[in-house]
View (cartoon, rainbow, N blue to C red):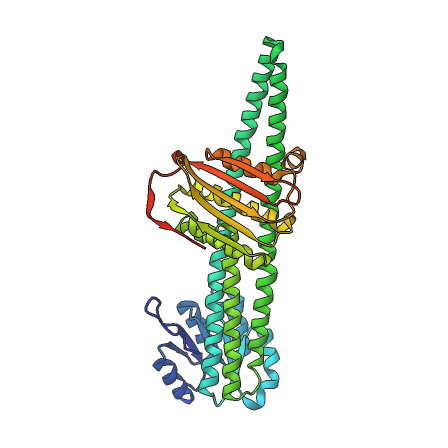
Length: 423
């Protein structure tokens, strides 16, 4: 494993070595310095606590047996201070004294090395814990950003709820005035009430979906990420055993793989909130969606672009993407299909997008009459909001085609010159 002492973009990692006889660690200090680390020295526990509070090193190598304050007591003081409690502490102890290391772990230590120190083993342990610390900082920052996004969304939802309540109150007042003015408007009043009820049902369903999504994300981050980090800690604990150099390198490689899986999982969570591919255009996002659908469901999904790629504003591209996403979700849940095609074509009025499958099909009229057909209702509403039209062609045992037609006036007014044929 390569030491992560410094990169072109980051300052060198700092290590605080605490030992009442630092001359015994000359080789260790030289090796750390040669590898790009910034090394700080403290001669006793009190000095170590003060230097740690002032310098905030990335990792502390702490001798167990020192006159005055022991290494274990020093570690307890570091962990009791909010400024230094997150700094990983690796104890240095004699080989015949490792039985006392349980007390060291209780004090807050994360690992230990035996004296005389073996450079390769020490570097492996240091690098593992520096990577874990860097990953922890990254996850904390991502969690903070997610919490901020949730707070912003909740604020927006409260404002939308207030506006909706205000509009509903105005509609109710106007409806009463029209009913008193003309009896012939009673039919329109009933239609308005029905529409308002549908909007309420849709709003309630959307809120339930959002809440369920937040719960799903929280569970995914908590459970899966927790399991990966637990596995990583277990592997770290294995390093406490006396291993050969090749075995140690193998263990470190496994730890790196676990870290990579953790990072990948966090990226997947972000993709469920908003696919990063949307930043590169609708075609890229749809291509990613088709590929992801095939991987998740095992149903082959082919994406075909038979036109120049339309340039949409972010809101419209997201709406089209969500319609396709909901269509593919319905295929996975209900269609029992063996293949799916997502096709984009162009006509004189705009462009059309089709999601077709060879599944068992259904009766659209029957589905629309059901009170729980929120998926179809949501798709039509998304299309309507961007000035597009949605059509569903299906029949039992005949497959299904979901088509959305987006007029040119929905575009930004520009098209890519190069025709794309994406598969």
